[in-house]
Length: 182
View 1 (spheres, rainbow, N blue to C red):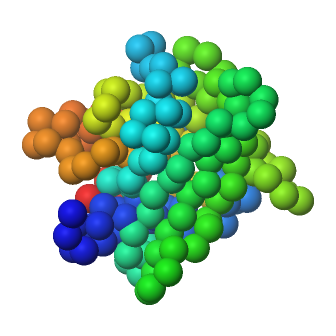
View 2: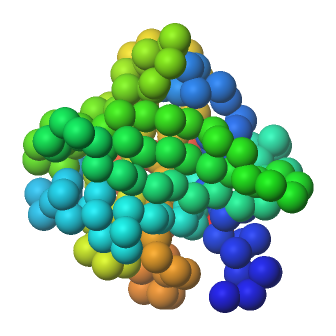
View 3: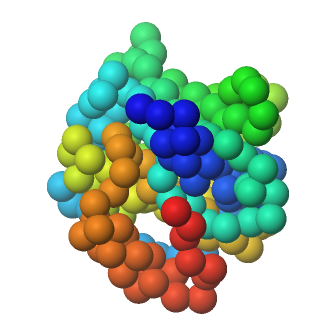
């Protein structure tokens, strides 16, 4: 993998997350369907739990991001995983979020930030293609940001067909939102 490819993949993933503080993410204003084929355990463990952000909503702060990825690791509690999200602006990756994530069944998950601000996030996996990509919407009833935070994470670039499918779903479920960026 070339440096350019890593920069591209990671740049795309951080856009919305850095545009708003995590605690402001939300609110849960969109009703989107969950992928009934989503398998929480499979998602959390495939590719050793590592995913690269590929698509996310645009923001002016996100253009500074050079990359973003997440790592899922099992905790001592069955069915709970610790997810850490890292981003890079210049040289080194910085921890962006540290969350405990549990399955909420039927394509949904719950994430709780570790630390003082134990904000609860609701995650809906709109599309999950095992071994390829996941397209999800994350929100919090505690948040005040009006941007619908949805992301595509993957194990490589999306094919033209996959990219078209994600763009079509994004337009269908988030018609009034700015389009995801690659």
